[in-house]
Image 1 (cartoon, helix red, strand yellow):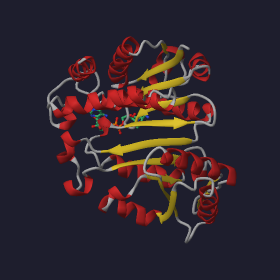
Image 2 (image 1 turned 45 degrees about the horizontal axis):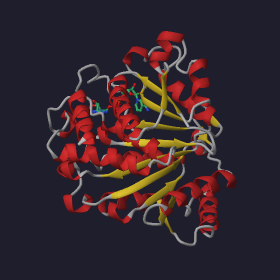
Image 3 (image 1 turned 180 degrees about the vertical axis):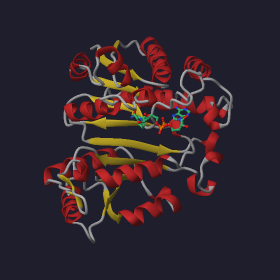
Image 4 (image 1 turned 30 degrees about the vertical axis):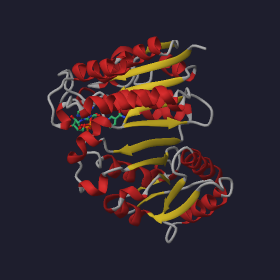
Amino acid sequence: MTKRIIALPGDGIGKEIMDSALRILSEIMVQDSIDFDIQEYPFGGAGIDSEGDPLPEKTLKACQESDAILLGAIGGPKWDQAPKRPEQGLLGLRKALGLFANIRPISVPKAVIHLSPLKEENVKDVDFIVVRELTGGIYFGEKRLDEDQASDLCTYTKTEIQRIIRKAFEIARTRNKKVTSVDKANVLATSKLWRQTADEVAQEFPDCTLEHQLVDSAAMVMITRPKDFDVIVTENLFGDILSDEASVIPGSLGMMPSASHSESGPSLYEPIHGSAPDIAGQDIANPMSMILSAAMMLRQSFGMEETAQKIESACDQVMNAGVLTKDLGGNAGTREFTDAVLKELRS
Ligand SMILES: NC(=O)c1ccc[n+]([C@@H]2O[C@H](COP(=O)([O-])OP(=O)(O)OC[C@H]3O[C@@H](n4cnc5c(N)ncnc54)[C@H](O)[C@@H]3O)[C@@H](O)[C@H]2O)c1
């Protein structure tokens, strides 16, 4: 059956790297004799410019009716003073689609291992996933800001914790079967409920192991022994910080994809970086983050494991052959890198 994909190129380098991902998907359609119905819609700053809204109604409707969504990146100085900011579109889309689980895979391609800020022996073979709860916790609790006092309420329900822990175990089952649940159970009540619930959910997955780590310890292990991790699961605020810490391990943001899942609706796939206005329009952005986001979509939304692996390995081969974009110390342009991946896919 035809898969309906909504492409939201967004702003800045979003358009350039989306073009790369769509070229790869066109090739996949030919190679795998599969039909994707891909439609582009305005979103973010582009939505403000064309429809006066970062999340235009027609864009939201198309996303809700889709099988999966690909997002480039949004934002830029042009809209910094606008009454509605592009980022509001992303928050609105996450909320409307109930995207509660954010998934970030972290690995370091061999060709660029020397770019990691960590010691080579520590990052060789690093391969883990951060599963971050995205719709609960302190970001969404009641906020008070008085002149000399302020508070942010952190709330989690058992159901919210159960569904994200289950998601982590489901992912771990397809990998090395180890879940590290990160909390601050020595201090926080929400973390105590988190830990107790993680232990209960673990009973449903007897083939997997569960370990608990305090967030301060997890932050240290991520730098000293990142190979220890398989699947990390944590709440919204800790996940925000730990996933950004993890994202510097490979040495460039330009290689890193992510996925956000709801309970039953379409998932959203996007690079972890922003719209990089400093390099937009110059054909120098690394398109790998977007191409690998498309590969994640094929794997996680459409069950196309082999095809996803084919794309990932084509990117690796191209980098091993020395075709690298500027962020990785090379001089290949966005289109040139994409051409090389296409050539590798066809070989
Ligand atoms: N999900 C999103 O769309 C998202 C996420 C973060 C930031 N933003 C927005 O993006 C805009 C720019 O933010 P920023 O500059 O702080 O972060 P950024 O991630 O856009 O850029 C940070 C640095 O990384 C580089 N970079 C990022 N992606 C790259 C790629 N694919 N190839 C090569 N280099 C790359 C940039 O050139 C820049 O030097 C802001 O408006 C911000 O709000 C959007």
